[in-house]
Image (cartoon, rainbow, N blue to C red; front, top):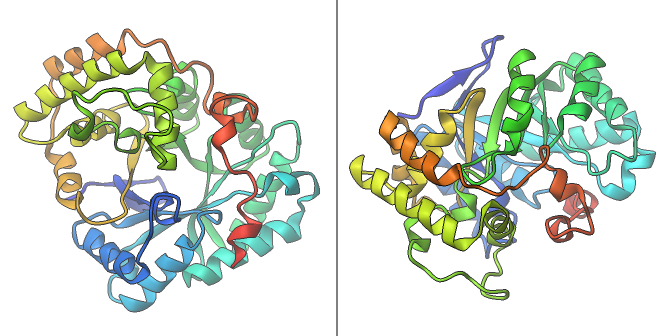
Length: 347
């Protein structure tokens, strides 16, 4: 079974979290009925925590539908959603705006209280993020939110929110074998403030799998999946396709040793890192449920970790604090982001 992680106040969630971004339509067509059925399969397998967001078009509604269709499974499920105000709304955001979005998530999900709301802010040049976080804290005290987390914050701006008295319990960020940015300062900061890490990108959108082992580097236009486009940029920063292939070869050897697959080894390696409470796996169907359940049983030894380090120790990047590259809207990473999805997700 999938292990669970428990916060200090007793809140428990699965260490493998089912991601929701892949159900938002940018990764291929989605059959809503099948998506809801698949959620039940994940819960039965022990993956009881779902990650979604107010900007993932239709995903909160899908989870709400699951909760209605499977009333006996719904109480077993934890839902982690996000509060992501549109870029154009940042300078006018107020308490009414925040509460309206939170109320909308409650209605979509069919919940009386949100288990965890993870706060994202697009542009630090608009200095209202502390004010917005304090509005979330007001709603937590009012009973609409159980826990507050953040997503994609760097250390200085997260510290401002924590210093303002917002009880941040988690930080969802990109952290993987090919993206080590949190290790520069975020890990220690979160350890000292008792903030757990919920990591996405641990399998690089599917690049960290046997499917890409020994394959030529995809060229511009070869991949249209938004997730793969995003993580190919990370691979480029990591050290390029040749170094990435060396990493895949090492992971494949370790996977064969443990009778598992590359993605499970990559996920296990991330779970074993300090402060990491869970990894988020993107899944449009149940094809990899069995592999996800194997992650818990994979135990990497010193030789495995040393072999991985021989490759990752030669990384070139990505460099900087958490999400710094993605915040440059004129840069390679920032140009592929969508900044105005909240209002558009209202349908």
